[in-house]
Length: 247
Ligand code: GLN
Image 1 (cartoon, rainbow, N blue to C red):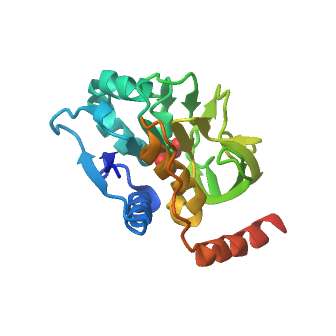
Image 2 (cartoon, helix red, strand yellow):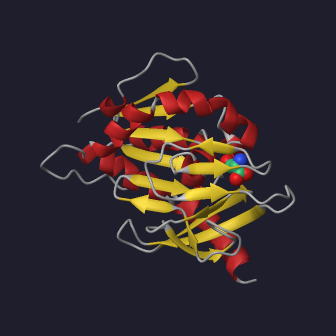
């Protein structure tokens, strides 16, 4: 079977609430199935990689300051990332990374941090730093082919507007904007979400959706992933769902 190639961007800057753990989950779930998984890193001033040679590009979340720090470098990667996305590389984006693939992120001081403009949405933070969307979140998703109530943790000032294809419906928490009905952004090769956590340890189906996409990318025959025993993960999630949805 092919090696799944992942590029983890700005792991040293965008790693709020253990977002890098998502890469450990993907690596672990590949290893348990005998799938080779290579995770390369890219950060400010690294040599420009061939983005399209990767099956998946991952960017985590970060505070406004870190987003400002990486902004100029990220813009230099725009053409490479765009070409990769258009040729089918999967983009997995959390919070700050999610915001920066849209048109722009206007931070609490009114500074515009330009996004790559891959997608039509844009994000504006309120003037007051006290107005943030913080807390546990449950998002009902169906993109894996079954209904998965994803559990995560959100902490963002930014209010993301103009999302036409959200990831899921908010059952608890805020989502893209304060008290909004929908959360995240989805295309067949894009998952963008405000869920930290890291979200894949809490929601193994989402990890498997991406692994399956990567394994099958460019192949005519579909390889089914071996089932793993997720009893413990599902029990943990159920505890959170019972707690959050009974309120
Ligand atoms: N700085 C951004 C905001 O507050 C993103 C935060 C994050 O990645 N958690 O909206």
